[in-house]
Amino acid sequence: GIYFQGFLGEIPWPSISGSIQIFDSTFKRIGFATPVFNISDAIVKVSHNKYEDTFIAMDASDTRNTTLEFSHNNVINTWIGFDVWDFFAPEHIGSTFLIKNNVIQSGIGIAFEQTFGEGNECLILGNNVQNATDLGIFLGPGTKDCTVIGGSNKTNMLDLGTDNILVGVNNMGTGVGPTIRHFNR
Image (cartoon, rainbow, N blue to C red; front, side, top):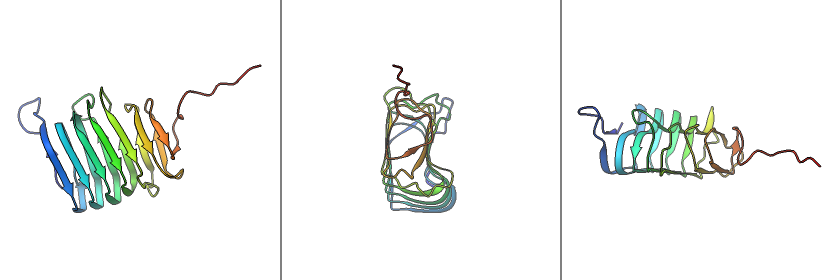
């Protein structure tokens, strides 16, 4: 695959930065197709690609002050289509995640497993993950203030985060907003 990783050198490993773009590419029968790791002050755009028979199409970990867009991709037969997680850094800080208009047919469509620190933004918009065999969208307990706009109540998702906004999806988690209480007369 194409790896963008700030991974070499003395510990703590220096991060990489800059503009990273992957367009109009095909990835077949590969483990991790387009991972980014340990990036800071970067703009990452992965768009209009085809992923087939990959373990994870796109994953990212340890981002700081980074904008990451994963859009208009076709992902077929993967374990996870898009995944963000913590590796060495305890949380992601000041980063923007835009996941939009992808068609993902995998075990898990979109997974946000990382811990959000201060200043993050997250928008998951108009993705077709209805054919995910395990779960369409997963927002882990470390996520907060993500906005998910689906388009079908057939989009199954699990929200374990805090103050996430969900529109047009079937939330299999604890629900959105405050708990409804019984009214006693």
